[in-house]
Length: 468
Ligand SMILES: Cc1cc2nc3c(=O)[nH]c(=O)nc-3n(C[C@H](O)[C@H](O)[C@H](O)COP(=O)(O)OP(=O)(O)OC[C@H]3O[C@@H](n4cnc5c(N)ncnc54)[C@H](O)[C@@H]3O)c2cc1C
Image 1 (cartoon, helix red, strand yellow):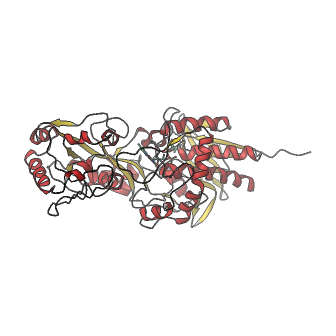
Image 2: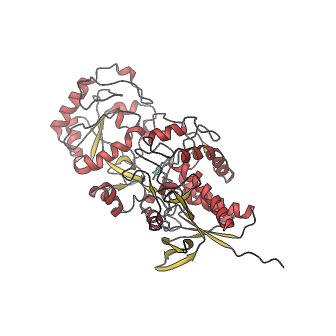
Image 3: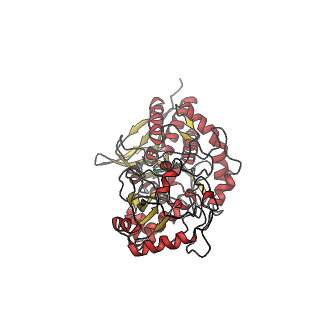
């Protein structure tokens, strides 16, 4: 008589893009191969709030179309990482991206080619409905495939016996318990929501940095620390984070103000401090947001524009603040309203305007237009140097807000967590918590890689359970 084999247990930690892809792919693989595997997804948040950054993300993905990645993708990733990135990781990402997008589409996700803020940049696709739809549809599909969801369930520790995973220690409803697990996929984000870790890696000021969306706070580095206690290797830039400038007054999620290249930016003393036109907005926002928080007096700066902003076609696409700009008929009055040194602001704008010597008809917000200020201007302004002169004058107070951190676990191109360069048996990781970004976040890659390596992790986990 055949004896039914005992069911194996796979636990996925985190209900963002990476965790949902892992859980759904694992449940499908188990069913396809008739393997008795229980798939549980644990998230620390409530059902209404789970989904981390993914829930709040427009989720642009860097693909030329749903079935094609740009030929330069791997090179672009390596260039963005100052050539510190893992080529095999990004090559696998390219290889799996079209099939992963097709798989997402098979679960009810529709894609469009979005118009980005104002400037074009690399081609992208976007799920209709963004992050909320991703979380909703993939959760529905995962439940149908048999995944069990546990909310308010905080992963604390990986239980090990004889170097094999035996369980996941969690806290739920104030009780600590160990859930049986043979294999674990960690997909619980970076450490931007952990003040101590932020302080340790970015300095004292980092603990007070604003979090860009309500879901950002749940990612407190738990998965990274749990794996490190097993000796997991680190990877990624531990001094790296993705941050963007947001309206200091606004309370809505990600109230970014990305029109600063078309005017000037001053600190509270009324002085410029960087080249606002150094590149397309997604090439300067990260550095700029960090400079605001860590270098500007009071960790606040002010974008100053004039009414010609309203003549830029679709300028609203680059402003996600719920509030209109502060406005006044004179620069001195505007300075008073926003709390900037008025004499200095008037002098700064006068010096800037005098340096705007190019033909203003060349102004083109959709790309680097080469309309540079005179070389005498310090700091320079390399593009979009058009005088700020047509009232009313507009001001946006800006702070830097962190979206996610780069430092994380070392994983290979099969999403296996590494220790001394070799896989830790039964442990996989995907998404933000894996450290593959260095220097600067490659634009529109975070969600894509979370899905691709989450799906790989889910499939590999099932293989791993079968092979034991
Ligand atoms: C406003 C905004 C806009 C963005 N725009 C883009 C974009 O256009 N394109 C792009 O590629 N990227 C974008 N990003 C980044 C991208 O959305 C995220 O990096 C990506 O979604 C992360 O997916 P993830 O699955 O790794 O983590 P998350 O989606 O953050 O999910 C992590 C989950 O883990 C849970 N968790 C954490 N700790 C524990 C624990 N101890 N136990 C149990 N559960 C735990 C959290 O509750 C959360 O649900 C944006 C981010 C934000 C916030």
